[in-house]
Each structure stands twice: as C-alpha cells, then as structure tokens.
Image (cartoon, rainbow over all chains, first blue to last red; front, side, top):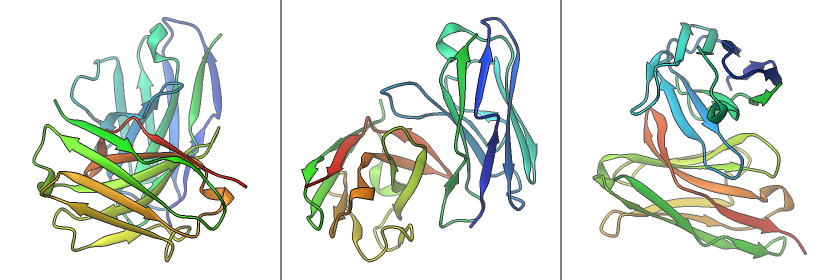
Length: 108
Length: 116
C-alpha cells in the first residue's frame, strides 16, 4: 500500500498570501495524483488531477506540481473561500486508493 | 448537471446491516466506475470500494473485505453498498463518487452510526 504524507497538518495564513502545501508518496506514483478541497459539512471537491491539471471550474490561483514522490499544491493568493482542508490522493497503484491525512488551512 | 445523491444511512447496532444507495444523474452511468469513500467523524478520507462500469469487477479495502458488498443497477443509474457485520469503527459519512482516474464527482454523503 502506498502511504501518502501531507505537511504541514495545519497552516495559519492571511488572505492574499501565497501558500504551498506538500504531499509525499512512499513510492513513486508517477503523475497519478489528485488534490481535493473539503469545507466543513461539505463533500470533497476535486481541484487537481494528473498532478497539475485543474479540474473543470477550478480558479487559476490553484496550481499543482510534482511527479514521482513529491508534490505541491499552490494557492497564489488566498481568498476567504479557500480556507478548508486539502487532501492529496494517489491513483497510480490501486487498490487501495490512498489519501493523505489532510492539511487544514486556517485564517491567521 | 452531474449529480450523485446518497441515501440509506442511519443508526444501527453492532453486528447489524445497512444498505446504502447512490442515485446518479447527468452522465452515462454505465460508462464509469463508481466508488464509496468514507470519513469517520473528525478524520480523513478512506477509500472503501470500487466497482467497474459493467459491475463485473469489484475491489474492497481490507478493512471491509468480506463484510461489505458493492453492486450497481445500470438500468436504474444506482450504486449500492451492502454493509453487514457492522462495527463501531464503520461509523462515518459515506460518500459515493464517480471515478475518472480520480474521484471527480462526489455526492453529499450519508451518515452511518454504529452504536448500541
């Protein structure tokens, strides 16, 4: 099973700031990596697939990069609606699909 | 508009059974694999099960293997999760999700609570 590790667990940031979230895989997942956003009481929403391709309707301030075992999600200028929990997920070697434990973005 | 709507959650005693449903609309249901993903209270996301578009292939997390069954009725555009021998650790919100490599569309979730 591929273990996905996200860092940090919590990030306190101010609106307008640029933020980078990290995700590491225990073995290579090539570019088969997705990012999801989850707000309280809501279902997750797909942001990024293929490590760097934005899903339909996702604003350009969200960008993904990386391949192999190291990945990042960057939000170029945080908006109030971006404060949420973000998960990475690999789909290179499944079953099982595996998720990181999540990074919570909170308002500083 | 692509939509997924889960139902069937509730409170069940340990050892009991429950069947979840997920009604799909807005896409050609039979063309896509579908999955169940769960989230225990205050915890992260855990993949539970996936079924191929035709229903011929199924996959399960080790934590539910032998207790849960996934199925689909493509004539009714509906996905199911039959959960037997439920345990306290199965308590979670259960989401159905459309699979296109990633989980590209999610339902709103249905809560399952296993408690005596």
